[in-house]
Amino acid sequence: MPTSWDFPEGAPITAELTAVRRLGGGSAYEAWLAFDEVTYAPVVVKAVRPGRIHDERTLLDLAREAEALAAVNHPVVARGLRHVPGGDLPHLVLEQVDGPRLSSLVRRYGPLEEHQYVPLAIEVASALHYLRRIGWVHLDVKPSNVIMGAPARLIDLSVARRADDAARTRGIGTDAYMSPEQWDPDRYGAPSAASDVWGLGATLFEAVAGYRAVDLPTDEPAALPDGVPPEVAATLEACLAVRPEDRPAPREVAEALEPVLDRQPPVRLGGGLRTR
Image (tube, rainbow, N blue to C red; front, side, top):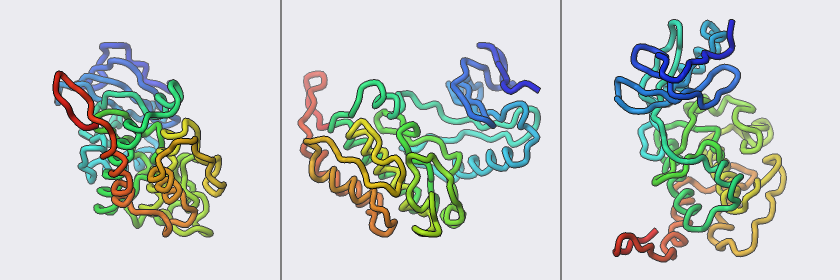
């Protein structure tokens, strides 16, 4: 059985979806940019690979992601549009979000400017505050899951869990951005909303510094470059606290950074002024 669908440009993925190009994928899924006749707009199709369409674990994971997408409705989180759970092509149809990934920007251009990373942090913190309020944990906050835009967008709920389910997980996430408790819940306690705050801290650190905060979450964080505002440095230190109970809540992250945002000079647009 082939490992990829290999849709040519313009080929039908389903009766409603027309392939534009492949975006990437992993061992169980591949992602396609497509045009959707239902929404009459570009979308992303996350399709189970041909060899996995009858794999029970893969289909359960797809269903769990669909459940997470259905539960989450926030302007900083990319939306799910529909879920086809079985048949010849199990798939999700997702909102297509324009903009580069934060990881790509840092890799290509280095650290972000203050007027870029502070709004980014506040926006992602707002999404994490919302997830905490509705009882979900993302578990994979990292630069490649943040799309830079106005506002920034948090993507990929493939490993998101309800809070009680997240507390029973171990080793789920991306190694370089997992909190200590995701690595070792026996030692550090159960994964929770505080785990996403660690991910936000690691993501913001990389945006500010241009390099990763830590190689493993139990290591001491790397030093920040000179000139980082003290409020930012203190917030990063708090987010990357080893003990989950020592980390701030997402709303406290936003509140700590708002004074930095307020100090940004106005930007002239079309003869008028606005604040960044």
